[in-house]
Image (cartoon, rainbow, N blue to C red; front, side, top):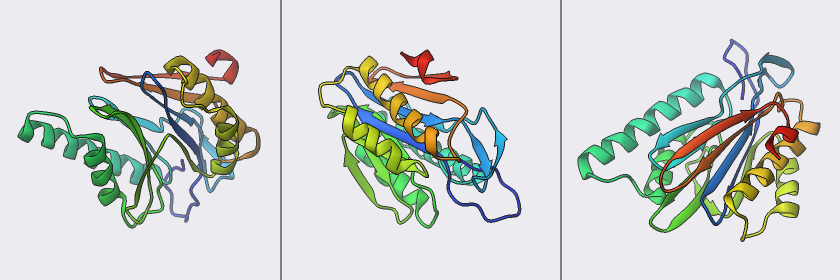
Length: 204
């Protein structure tokens, strides 16, 4: 994720999401950079709680990401007030796709509804794809390689935390726009909890 200034930035960050038997895990690095070359913040929050049982990752500019989060959270809150129940994950993902359309961001949405734990990739054209695991940002290829090695459908929630953190850590080894620790969100039908770690060894 990159801080705002007057220059044009490339998207830089690494975020991952995966489905487990007990819920969804989202993970992201904590580095904010200027064009992937200068580290401007080492404690950037790239996962946000947007729904009673869902969270979303951010990449791209800080201002754009924060505006997207505010609008998505408002839409989810308004839906719940009007309908008396939270949005389904599919409806939330479609709303996110509509809000992000036309930007360079590629957030991941993870949450739990009556269909169980779910992860969605959302692209800047408004496309929404559901999968059991996904990665986004400049470290995508590195994180995906780790996920392909480590992921299996019978992961528990705690095992999923280790896998997601390992995938982000793999990207931080080589991607200069990713680094400075890992934030992990555990998402269940009851709540969303987040913790930050300075290194992978703290996760295990």
